[in-house]
Image 1 (tube, rainbow, N blue to C red):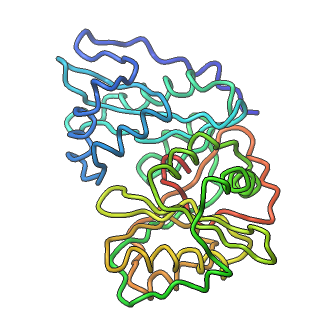
Image 2 (image 1 turned 60 degrees about the vertical axis):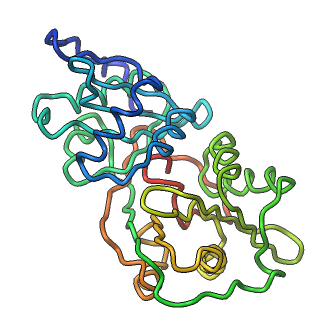
Length: 291
Protein backbone atom coordinates (compact mmCIF):
# COMPACT_ATOMS: atom_id res chain seq x y z
CA UNK A 1 0.00 0.00 0.00
CA UNK A 2 1.25 3.50 -0.79
CA UNK A 3 2.31 5.21 2.40
CA UNK A 4 0.60 8.49 3.22
CA UNK A 5 1.81 8.96 6.78
CA UNK A 6 4.06 11.76 5.60
CA UNK A 7 1.09 13.65 4.16
CA UNK A 8 0.33 15.62 7.32
CA UNK A 9 -1.91 18.69 7.01
CA UNK A 10 0.33 21.70 6.62
CA UNK A 11 0.29 24.02 9.61
CA UNK A 12 0.17 27.28 7.71
CA UNK A 13 -2.92 28.95 9.13
CA UNK A 14 -2.49 32.59 8.18
CA UNK A 15 -4.59 33.74 11.11
CA UNK A 16 -7.61 34.33 8.87
CA UNK A 17 -8.34 30.85 7.50
CA UNK A 18 -8.86 27.92 9.88
CA UNK A 19 -9.12 24.21 9.10
CA UNK A 20 -11.82 22.69 11.33
CA UNK A 21 -13.84 19.44 11.42
CA UNK A 22 -16.93 19.47 9.20
CA UNK A 23 -19.97 19.96 11.47
CA UNK A 24 -23.68 20.25 10.78
CA UNK A 25 -23.45 23.97 11.47
CA UNK A 26 -21.37 24.25 8.28
CA UNK A 27 -24.04 22.79 5.99
CA UNK A 28 -25.62 26.09 4.92
CA UNK A 29 -22.18 27.48 4.12
CA UNK A 30 -21.28 24.33 2.20
CA UNK A 31 -24.50 24.63 0.19
CA UNK A 32 -23.71 28.23 -0.73
CA UNK A 33 -20.20 27.23 -1.73
CA UNK A 34 -21.42 24.45 -4.02
CA UNK A 35 -23.97 26.82 -5.58
CA UNK A 36 -21.18 29.30 -6.26
CA UNK A 37 -19.29 26.73 -8.32
CA UNK A 38 -22.52 25.46 -9.97
CA UNK A 39 -22.59 22.03 -8.31
CA UNK A 40 -26.27 21.01 -8.10
CA UNK A 41 -26.29 19.76 -4.50
CA UNK A 42 -29.33 20.31 -2.31
CA UNK A 43 -29.08 20.90 1.43
CA UNK A 44 -30.37 17.35 1.86
CA UNK A 45 -27.50 15.97 -0.26
CA UNK A 46 -24.92 17.69 1.94
CA UNK A 47 -26.73 16.50 5.06
CA UNK A 48 -26.75 12.85 3.97
CA UNK A 49 -23.08 13.02 2.98
CA UNK A 50 -22.08 14.36 6.38
CA UNK A 51 -24.22 11.85 8.26
CA UNK A 52 -22.50 9.01 6.40
CA UNK A 53 -18.98 10.39 6.61
CA UNK A 54 -16.74 13.07 8.03
CA UNK A 55 -14.46 15.78 6.78
CA UNK A 56 -13.07 19.29 7.11
CA UNK A 57 -13.96 22.84 6.17
CA UNK A 58 -11.90 25.96 5.76
CA UNK A 59 -13.41 28.98 7.50
CA UNK A 60 -12.63 32.66 7.06
CA UNK A 61 -14.41 35.07 9.38
CA UNK A 62 -17.10 32.46 9.99
CA UNK A 63 -17.70 31.81 6.28
CA UNK A 64 -17.08 28.43 4.66
CA UNK A 65 -14.54 28.82 1.83
CA UNK A 66 -13.58 25.16 1.40
CA UNK A 67 -15.00 21.68 2.01
CA UNK A 68 -13.77 18.10 1.81
CA UNK A 69 -15.24 14.82 3.06
CA UNK A 70 -14.47 11.11 3.23
CA UNK A 71 -16.43 7.91 3.76
CA UNK A 72 -15.05 4.74 5.33
CA UNK A 73 -15.82 1.39 3.71
CA UNK A 74 -14.58 -0.98 6.35
CA UNK A 75 -11.03 -0.72 7.65
CA UNK A 76 -9.31 -1.15 4.29
CA UNK A 77 -10.80 1.46 1.95
CA UNK A 78 -12.47 4.86 1.79
CA UNK A 79 -13.68 7.33 -0.80
CA UNK A 80 -13.15 11.08 -0.75
CA UNK A 81 -15.09 13.84 -2.44
CA UNK A 82 -17.07 17.08 -2.18
CA UNK A 83 -13.73 18.91 -2.35
CA UNK A 84 -14.56 22.53 -3.17
CA UNK A 85 -12.61 25.75 -2.73
CA UNK A 86 -14.32 29.11 -3.27
CA UNK A 87 -13.34 30.72 -6.56
CA UNK A 88 -11.90 33.78 -4.83
CA UNK A 89 -9.70 31.58 -2.61
CA UNK A 90 -8.25 29.32 -5.28
CA UNK A 91 -4.55 29.25 -6.09
CA UNK A 92 -3.44 29.56 -2.47
CA UNK A 93 -2.88 25.92 -1.59
CA UNK A 94 -6.21 25.44 0.17
CA UNK A 95 -7.17 22.44 -1.94
CA UNK A 96 -3.89 20.74 -1.01
CA UNK A 97 -4.47 21.59 2.63
CA UNK A 98 -7.90 19.98 2.61
CA UNK A 99 -6.66 16.92 0.74
CA UNK A 100 -3.78 16.33 3.14
CA UNK A 101 -6.16 16.57 6.08
CA UNK A 102 -8.39 13.92 4.50
CA UNK A 103 -5.49 11.57 3.81
CA UNK A 104 -4.25 11.87 7.38
CA UNK A 105 -7.73 11.29 8.80
CA UNK A 106 -8.43 8.24 6.61
CA UNK A 107 -4.97 6.63 7.01
CA UNK A 108 -4.06 3.76 6.58
CA UNK A 109 -6.98 3.00 4.25
CA UNK A 110 -6.57 2.90 0.47
CA UNK A 111 -8.38 5.90 -1.00
CA UNK A 112 -10.66 6.12 -4.05
CA UNK A 113 -11.78 9.34 -5.72
CA UNK A 114 -13.15 10.69 -8.97
CA UNK A 115 -11.09 13.62 -10.21
CA UNK A 116 -11.82 16.44 -12.61
CA UNK A 117 -9.07 17.32 -15.06
CA UNK A 118 -8.14 20.30 -12.88
CA UNK A 119 -7.71 18.13 -9.80
CA UNK A 120 -5.61 15.35 -11.32
CA UNK A 121 -2.19 17.07 -10.81
CA UNK A 122 -2.92 17.58 -7.08
CA UNK A 123 -3.80 13.92 -6.63
CA UNK A 124 -0.91 12.62 -8.71
CA UNK A 125 1.52 14.51 -6.46
CA UNK A 126 0.10 12.56 -3.53
CA UNK A 127 0.56 9.19 -5.19
CA UNK A 128 -2.84 8.60 -6.74
CA UNK A 129 -2.92 6.70 -10.03
CA UNK A 130 -5.74 6.63 -12.62
CA UNK A 131 -7.68 3.38 -12.96
CA UNK A 132 -10.65 4.32 -15.16
CA UNK A 133 -13.08 6.96 -16.36
CA UNK A 134 -16.64 7.82 -15.34
CA UNK A 135 -19.09 9.46 -17.73
CA UNK A 136 -21.90 11.59 -16.30
CA UNK A 137 -25.15 11.21 -18.24
CA UNK A 138 -28.21 13.31 -17.48
CA UNK A 139 -31.42 14.70 -18.88
CA UNK A 140 -35.11 13.91 -19.27
CA UNK A 141 -35.72 10.60 -21.05
CA UNK A 142 -37.11 11.20 -24.49
CA UNK A 143 -39.31 8.12 -24.73
CA UNK A 144 -41.77 6.22 -22.57
CA UNK A 145 -40.58 3.19 -20.67
CA UNK A 146 -42.40 0.04 -19.68
CA UNK A 147 -40.97 -1.90 -16.77
CA UNK A 148 -39.62 -5.32 -17.67
CA UNK A 149 -41.75 -8.27 -16.47
CA UNK A 150 -41.92 -8.63 -12.72
CA UNK A 151 -40.45 -12.11 -12.99
CA UNK A 152 -37.15 -10.44 -13.90
CA UNK A 153 -37.09 -7.16 -11.96
CA UNK A 154 -39.12 -6.42 -8.85
CA UNK A 155 -39.18 -3.84 -6.10
CA UNK A 156 -36.63 -4.31 -3.35
CA UNK A 157 -37.94 -5.16 0.12
CA UNK A 158 -36.35 -5.00 3.54
CA UNK A 159 -35.76 -8.75 3.41
CA UNK A 160 -33.53 -8.22 0.35
CA UNK A 161 -31.02 -6.04 2.18
CA UNK A 162 -28.53 -8.74 3.13
CA UNK A 163 -28.35 -10.23 -0.34
CA UNK A 164 -28.06 -6.77 -1.93
CA UNK A 165 -25.24 -5.90 0.48
CA UNK A 166 -23.50 -9.12 -0.56
CA UNK A 167 -23.99 -8.39 -4.27
CA UNK A 168 -22.63 -4.88 -3.77
CA UNK A 169 -19.59 -6.20 -1.90
CA UNK A 170 -18.93 -8.69 -4.71
CA UNK A 171 -19.33 -5.97 -7.36
CA UNK A 172 -17.21 -3.31 -5.65
CA UNK A 173 -14.93 -5.13 -3.24
CA UNK A 174 -16.08 -2.66 -0.59
CA UNK A 175 -18.05 -2.98 2.64
CA UNK A 176 -20.80 -0.37 2.13
CA UNK A 177 -23.64 -1.57 4.36
CA UNK A 178 -24.17 1.82 6.03
CA UNK A 179 -24.32 3.62 2.69
CA UNK A 180 -26.68 1.09 1.14
CA UNK A 181 -28.97 1.11 4.15
CA UNK A 182 -29.31 4.90 3.99
CA UNK A 183 -29.88 4.94 0.23
CA UNK A 184 -32.44 2.13 0.50
CA UNK A 185 -34.32 4.03 3.22
CA UNK A 186 -34.46 7.23 1.17
CA UNK A 187 -35.04 5.84 -2.33
CA UNK A 188 -36.65 3.12 -4.41
CA UNK A 189 -34.77 -0.15 -4.77
CA UNK A 190 -35.03 -2.86 -7.41
CA UNK A 191 -33.77 -6.42 -7.58
CA UNK A 192 -33.19 -8.44 -10.73
CA UNK A 193 -33.96 -12.08 -10.05
CA UNK A 194 -33.26 -15.06 -12.27
CA UNK A 195 -34.15 -18.68 -11.42
CA UNK A 196 -35.27 -17.42 -8.02
CA UNK A 197 -31.84 -15.97 -7.23
CA UNK A 198 -31.11 -12.20 -6.99
CA UNK A 199 -28.49 -11.31 -9.60
CA UNK A 200 -28.55 -7.53 -9.65
CA UNK A 201 -29.82 -4.42 -7.89
CA UNK A 202 -30.42 -0.71 -8.39
CA UNK A 203 -31.45 2.23 -6.24
CA UNK A 204 -33.14 5.42 -7.47
CA UNK A 205 -33.36 8.48 -5.24
CA UNK A 206 -33.76 12.25 -5.16
CA UNK A 207 -30.44 14.01 -5.70
CA UNK A 208 -29.30 17.29 -7.19
CA UNK A 209 -31.55 18.57 -9.99
CA UNK A 210 -33.79 15.49 -9.98
CA UNK A 211 -33.12 11.80 -9.44
CA UNK A 212 -29.97 9.71 -9.61
CA UNK A 213 -30.09 6.02 -10.52
CA UNK A 214 -27.24 4.31 -8.75
CA UNK A 215 -25.68 2.24 -7.52
CA UNK A 216 -26.51 -0.34 -10.15
CA UNK A 217 -24.87 -3.76 -9.89
CA UNK A 218 -25.46 -6.51 -12.43
CA UNK A 219 -23.73 -9.38 -14.20
CA UNK A 220 -23.96 -7.89 -17.70
CA UNK A 221 -25.06 -4.75 -19.58
CA UNK A 222 -28.45 -6.24 -20.52
CA UNK A 223 -29.33 -6.86 -16.88
CA UNK A 224 -28.09 -3.40 -15.89
CA UNK A 225 -30.26 -1.87 -18.61
CA UNK A 226 -33.31 -3.84 -17.39
CA UNK A 227 -32.80 -2.47 -13.88
CA UNK A 228 -32.35 1.11 -15.14
CA UNK A 229 -35.39 0.85 -17.42
CA UNK A 230 -37.52 -0.26 -14.49
CA UNK A 231 -36.40 2.77 -12.46
CA UNK A 232 -37.02 5.07 -15.44
CA UNK A 233 -40.53 3.65 -15.92
CA UNK A 234 -41.39 4.68 -12.36
CA UNK A 235 -39.85 8.15 -12.72
CA UNK A 236 -41.47 8.98 -16.04
CA UNK A 237 -40.35 12.26 -17.62
CA UNK A 238 -38.27 13.54 -14.72
CA UNK A 239 -34.69 14.74 -14.78
CA UNK A 240 -32.34 11.80 -14.25
CA UNK A 241 -28.60 11.46 -13.72
CA UNK A 242 -26.54 8.29 -14.16
CA UNK A 243 -22.76 8.07 -13.62
CA UNK A 244 -21.38 5.06 -15.47
CA UNK A 245 -17.97 3.68 -16.35
CA UNK A 246 -16.63 4.33 -19.84
CA UNK A 247 -16.41 0.54 -20.20
CA UNK A 248 -19.99 -0.21 -19.08
CA UNK A 249 -21.34 -0.49 -22.64
CA UNK A 250 -24.30 1.67 -21.59
CA UNK A 251 -23.13 5.05 -22.90
CA UNK A 252 -24.51 4.86 -26.43
CA UNK A 253 -27.88 3.63 -25.17
CA UNK A 254 -28.09 6.37 -22.52
CA UNK A 255 -27.27 9.03 -25.14
CA UNK A 256 -29.95 7.58 -27.39
CA UNK A 257 -32.73 7.83 -24.81
CA UNK A 258 -31.97 11.47 -23.97
CA UNK A 259 -29.53 11.06 -21.08
CA UNK A 260 -26.60 12.79 -22.76
CA UNK A 261 -23.02 12.57 -21.57
CA UNK A 262 -22.20 15.98 -20.09
CA UNK A 263 -18.85 15.41 -18.39
CA UNK A 264 -16.08 12.93 -17.64
CA UNK A 265 -13.99 12.35 -14.52
CA UNK A 266 -11.04 10.08 -13.84
CA UNK A 267 -11.22 7.42 -11.15
CA UNK A 268 -7.98 7.37 -9.14
CA UNK A 269 -6.67 5.33 -6.23
CA UNK A 270 -4.00 5.67 -3.59
CA UNK A 271 -3.07 2.19 -2.36
CA UNK A 272 -4.65 -1.12 -3.30
CA UNK A 273 -7.63 -1.55 -5.56
CA UNK A 274 -10.66 -3.20 -3.90
CA UNK A 275 -10.87 -6.93 -4.56
CA UNK A 276 -14.16 -7.25 -6.45
CA UNK A 277 -15.09 -10.91 -6.84
CA UNK A 278 -18.17 -10.76 -9.08
CA UNK A 279 -19.96 -12.03 -11.02
CA UNK A 280 -21.92 -8.80 -10.49
CA UNK A 281 -20.07 -5.59 -11.35
CA UNK A 282 -20.84 -1.91 -10.97
CA UNK A 283 -22.69 -0.26 -13.86
CA UNK A 284 -23.63 3.02 -12.14
CA UNK A 285 -22.27 4.88 -9.12
CA UNK A 286 -24.20 5.96 -6.05
CA UNK A 287 -22.49 9.31 -6.66
CA UNK A 288 -19.10 10.50 -7.83
CA UNK A 289 -18.18 11.12 -4.19
CA UNK A 290 -19.52 7.89 -2.68
CA UNK A 291 -18.41 5.73 -5.61
